[in-house]
Amino acid sequence: MKTFKQIMRRKVAAVCLVVIFLIFTAAIFAPLLAPYSPNEQFKDGLTLQGAPIAPNSQYLLGTDLLGRDLLSRLIYGARTSLVVGILANGVALLLGTTIGLVAGYLRGRLGSLIMRVTDLMMAFPALLLAITLAAIFSPSLLIVALVIAMVNWVQVARVIYTQTIAISEREFVEASRSIGASNRRILVKHILPHLMPTILVWGTLGIATTVLLEATLSFLGIGVRPPTPSWGNIIFENQTYFITAPWLVFIPGLAIITLALCFNLLGDTLRDELDPTQRGRQ
Amino acid sequence: MLNYVLRRLAQAGLILLGVSFITFALLYVLPADPAVQIAGRSATPETVASIRAQLGLDQPLLAQYWNYLSNLAQGDFGRSYLQKTEVSTLIQSRIGPSLSLMFFAILIELIIGLSAGIYSAMRRGKLSDNVVMVSSFIAISAPQFIISIFVLYIFAVKLGWFPIGGYGRPIHYVLPALTLGILGSGWYSRVMRSSMIDVLRQDYIRTARAKGAPISRIIRVHAFKNAVLPIIAMIGLDIGIFMGGIVVVESVFGWPGIGQLAWQAIQRVDIPIIMAVTLVSAIAIVIGNLIADLIAPFVDPRIRLK
Image (tube, rainbow over all chains, first blue to last red; front, side):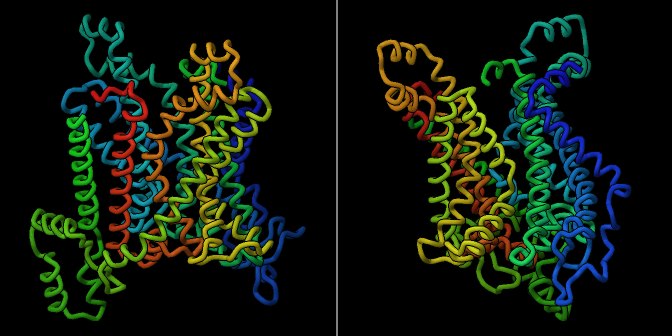
């Protein structure tokens, strides 16, 4: 609650929170909000020459190359983008936190071995690794989310690792160890709560990264497969029409940028508010 | 010093070994049998078996990895499944255009990122600072493919100032290099701003101010050298993001580099090419970080090579 109030004080972050809330609402209530079914091809949805129709009063954002309503596809696409974003980011966060926490607490040989593995992962270009993985496993929503998680956990692990080392040195950890607390108890009850701000910040920033990665993979044709709409694959499907029907590319594009921007700005504000070392920089 | 260089070189070597193992392992767990892919659908089991023996696919995993490694060491990345050519020849003919595009893009990225960051730091808290920072956030949040198509639409299709795509003349560089450079500058301006703000707080800056040095001289002579240090490490890390971006930008602008090669390979699931591009990028990243690490102690004598 305190964090929420802190955020609402910052105008930019408050606006972002509202936008994110609206996009979530649209995604959840898609069947109620969408004017048409996202996959229905309308007979009057294409011109006589077979080209998409520009935005008008019947199709508010126009129709796509198959004569489907773009607004409806966008609203349903928000579901896909958010589900992939949250799922991928959740897995990445869980994996990164666990690995960083264990490596940072154990240190020693095992700890440094684990961190060498993250060094190795850092040497892979993220997008190319995701492309390779997605090309190998035929993509479904779940696979795309897992592929993105496999690429994104590394940074979380490194941040958590550094912080865990710092926290493990503090007296209260020493104190609870001296009264016989188990490693598990120390990790969960004493160290993890101190990492929550970091996890929250990276959770927020991470959604922006995953949404962008999903869109890029879908644009390359190896993300979420049509006909399931996602903001990335709407652009992928319609890119050949970008000269004659630019709205088909730029409206979903704007949606992607807005969502990623809001999560980035929100995450940055959270970092300013929650991380004491960042205070006073603004 | 020699010790430090040697240790960093050994580390880089180990990382490359690890990368090669992962790319190999990915190739190995492929659901599709490469021998079947090369032989074609109508091939008899005997043909497939002989191709498998030819490629060494009937040998144990470690022996195959050893073959893969020794081939790699000789610059042999294997053969493309579908183009029936050596992957190394394809990479060789494509790497030049990519490197030249990267050079200009990084140059633009640095010029825009550093100057925006310094400007923002000097106007800290003012409206112009906020405008610059929100713009860098937009640059960070905008996927390359959308901006590439957008830039292409406005400047090539609508205004007709630049060609729609292609390669060869200097004018072809403008749109792809600017797209990559402007989007990449977002991180640099943010890092440069906070680094500059930290430096401007230092006592020696206050001393210089007290002695009446103009702000432009303070930035140029005293602050810049110290504030730019984190940027050097960043360029090394940035190469990884860049290699990804290049796939998207090259495929939209029809740039004949390794990014476009990778994109074409994705469409046809030509795994050896995707692997080779990944490996080449990983090598670029490792070398980039190595150079950044080796340069750092020269730029900042305080980094006393532990």
